[in-house]
Length: 500
Image (cartoon, rainbow, N blue to C red; front, side):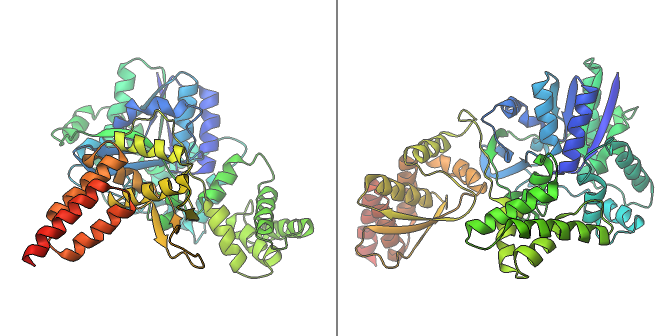
C-alpha cells in the first residue's frame, strides 16, 4: 500500500501537465483531491463530454442561499486533471478537505469571491522565501520558471515537497486553527482510503499542505479530537459555469491567477508556445482592423526569445511576449495591449455544465427561457438592441426585467440613442457566476420566472411605505408584463393616496 502526495499550485498549467503525466505513469486506484466532500454527489458529472471548464463547484445552504462557497476549476487546474483522469480510468475519486458544513453556516473563511480560503500561501509566504533564496525578486516569476513552464522530464513534485518541508520546519508561525482542521481532515481522508484497501493512493493538494498531509503515521486520535464537535449545517452542491475573468486575481479571488488565458495557452499548446501565442495576438489585432503582418509576428517571436535570454529565463514568459508584442505589433502603444490583455491574457471563456446538472426549479426555468429566446449567457459585456415589435425581442425584454425584479441583474438598460419611437430598448448584458447564487436566493418566490417575479412584486407592494416606491414598482411591472404585480401596485397606490 503506497500513498503519494502531489503538491500543486491551484490553477497551475505546469503542475497540471506534470500531474497528468505522473498519474498516467503510476496509475493509482484512488485519487483524493483537496476539495469539499459534499461535492461527492455531483462529482461524476465531471466526466461528461458536455461539461466544459471553466466551471465551479458550488456548495450552499438551501435555508440561506446567500451563504455559499465556490471551488473554481479550469482545464489547466491540476485538481481538474486529477478528477478527469481518475474518472476516466475507473479510480475512486474523492474530495478530502474539511467539510463545508463545518464552517459555512458560521460565515467561515472566504476569499472575497465567495469561495474557500486559500490563505496558506499568503501568510506565511513560502513562495516569497524560496524565490528570494533563488535570487528572484518576484515569487510568481520564480514559480513560473521552475514549475509552470516545465514541459519535459520528471515532474517537480519531489522538489516541491522537499522545499515545503524545509520551509515548514523553519521559523514559520503556527498554522491557524482553520488550516489545522483542513489538514487534519485531509489526513483522515487518506487513512479512510487505506482502511478500505486501496493499494496506490494519490493525494492532490496545495504545495504548502504536502508535509502535513503526507504524515499520516499516528496522530489519528489527535486529528479526530481536532475535528470533533464542529457544527454541521445542511448544504447542497452543484456545478455552475465559471469564467476566466472570475478566475483572475483582479476579480478578488484569493487563489486566482493573473493571466488565465495565458495559462490555458501554456497548458494546451503542444509546442512552440511563444510562436502560437503571438499568432493569436496578431489574429486578434487583425479582427480589430489593426496592422499585424506575418513578418511582424516573426520579429516579435525573435524579440521575445531575446528578452528571455537577456533576463535569464528558460522560456519567454508573459512579460516577454507582452513587451515584444507591444514593441513590434502594437508599435509601442499600450491601447492594443489592453485589448490583448482583456481578450487573450485574461480571456473571455465561459464554461458549460450538462443540462441535467442539479438546479433549483427557478434556475431550470431561466435556462429553458434562455434557450427559447436564443439569449445565451456570455462572459463579456455585449450590447443587445431589442425591437419590441418582434415577439422574440419582447420576450427577451420581459425576461430581463423580471430577473431584475428578482435581484438577478443580468442586464442593464441604457438609452437607445438615435432610435425613433418607443419600441426600441438597448441593454448591456454580462453573465456573472454569482448570478447563480442570486437565482437560488430568488427561488423562495416561486419555481418559474414569471410566478417568482409576480410574487416578489406583490411583496414589495405590501411592504412599500412611500408613493414613489409604488409608482416605480407599477412601471417595472408594466414593462415586465406582470399584470398581477401591476394590480398589487395600484391597490397599494390607492391605499397610500387615501392617507397621504
